[in-house]
Amino acid sequence: MRQPSGGLHPVDGQPPLPDLSEVSVPDAMSACLVMWTPEQLAIRADEAIDVLAEAMGYGPAMREGSRRQLIEHLTMPGFRAVAIVGPLADIVGFGYGYLCRPGQWWRDWVADAMPVVADRRRWLDDACTVSELHVRPACQGIGLGEAMLRGMLSSASSRTVVLSTAETTDARSRAWRLYRRMGFRALRRGLRYPGDPRGFAVFGRDLPWWDGSVRAHGGSRWVAGREEVTQC
Image (cartoon, rainbow, N blue to C red; front, side, top):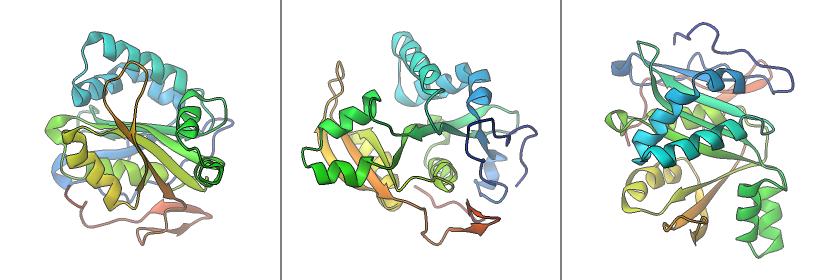
């Protein structure tokens, strides 16, 4: 698959970016899956947040809060971002994650929800998180979220990955099916973020991503090419 120029350059202190040249996205989209460094995502932060706001139905206040959070997360350890870029270099979908460390608000929020010490150690001692993963509504349901998630986690060096998602009906009909299909399991249910009336579930999955779609290549793991992306 074609890669936009300048899309795969690691920066000092960051792990090497995976080879995504054979990760498939639906041909009808004429789109590319690219991995971005923090600096590259920062340049296109406003466009990325437009995708997030559209997917989540956020108004101006929530959009601005999400933008501030994204900028803060750019400095997190092991930060990785992935995007689906359309034929006009427009962002169709994007996501990002980072390594979990004690003292991070989200990581500690999840730890507090796990009263059993063994569970906290099992899932959080050597973990990364997928903080955001969004696709424009008009492009949902054709496998782009799965392609991004596979691309982001194919080279993850941690032992586990954890994430949270809302327990709304719409979220469960699509996001939940995606995570279940990709081997995640619910660790906690009915959690609340401060100021958010919705319930959230925490999902986790063991790494590395050895599920038949990943193979060794040049000492790293990468997503093997597929003829098509599984439909949601």
